[in-house]
Amino acid sequence: MGFAVTVTRQRDGAALALVLVMASSLLRHALGMLLLGTAITGCAADVDDEDVGVDEAEIKKSPDGALQIYTMNTHHMSEPGKDSFEVTDWRQMLSYMREQAYHPDIILLSEVGRNNSVPSQPCVTFVRGLQKALSPKGKIEWNCEQAKGHVTKLDNAGGGTAIVYRKNLVPQEKVVLVQWSLDKSSGKCVPDQTGPGLSLIQVFKDGKRRVAVASLHLVSGTTEGATNQLGRDCSEKSLRDVTEAMAKIDADVKIIGGDMNHADAARRVEGTNIIHEQWEGGYAETCGYLAKGQKYNAGFKDPWFRDCAASCSVKASGDTSYTAAQTQCISSCMGKALGPGRIDWTLAKGGQIDDNVLIEYADARAAYVRQTGDANAVEKYADHRANRMLIKY
Image (cartoon, rainbow, N blue to C red; front, top):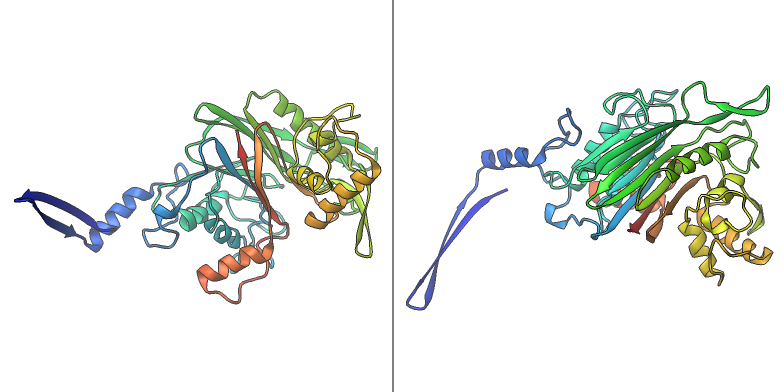
């Protein structure tokens, strides 16, 4: 960073400009350090004053009255050279974010800050990486909340739920819910006694508005795999706890996102065709577009359902009774776009959802290679694809 002073005088109709430019490496360092600050309260930010990220002038805040939301299972923040490494590299997502129109306002994370069979990395490491990639001089800063423990340690709950948020969003209230797991001896849902299942809800003040977000990594209670479980686990009950808790919160916008460990629908694949069998109970109770005929529905909107309905010439609405053909078209569209057993959902209530994008592995890797020159980068940023959307109040 340089320091310049310009003095202009008018004499006889002509302008004389005296430009004094003062710069030194010492001054550059001092100003850089003043601008950086800390990304996490009580922790020095792991960023320096080198131009390792985008120029600060290039960073674009989301439009007034809008929030850029990401949802990501980090795959325990796997990173080459770290104890967490297991094939993927979460840093590729930072490279992707760096090339987008708007910086993230809120990131709903899972598998962060936990110490399971494969250790993760602390949430502060995610924040520092984000800071270094997007705003190394500190014009924009982020903080982290997690379900349990300390953001600097590996003592989060087993699901590793966390929320990274832009620092000028002011935390208001935090709710942590114990999830339900299947007791195989009784076949009933019981509170998860081992502690990995914690859902994190955080409310923020954004100027005059309030936004409530929930980061989820639901317990999978069966040994049959995470998809198409037909209600044989307790994810439906855990989801209802979250939506009922959200219903008690006063907020302009409410967002639920994360790894549900349970498919949105039961689908089967026949050749190149995806055949819809049924909407899963937890999804049918949560997605507001399926409210018709439901005893309970939380009214959250899934932009993938909405967009696929539009492509099928169907108006998605909580008052719509979908024909079998319409349901097949919508579900098949979602299955082709997201995979037939999608378990990562992001749904919102209130506001308008725009620019809804599933982030392909290849796109994030390409951004990482462009920015680092590392042609040998691993193929994926995680073992789940992330999602981003812009939501307007």
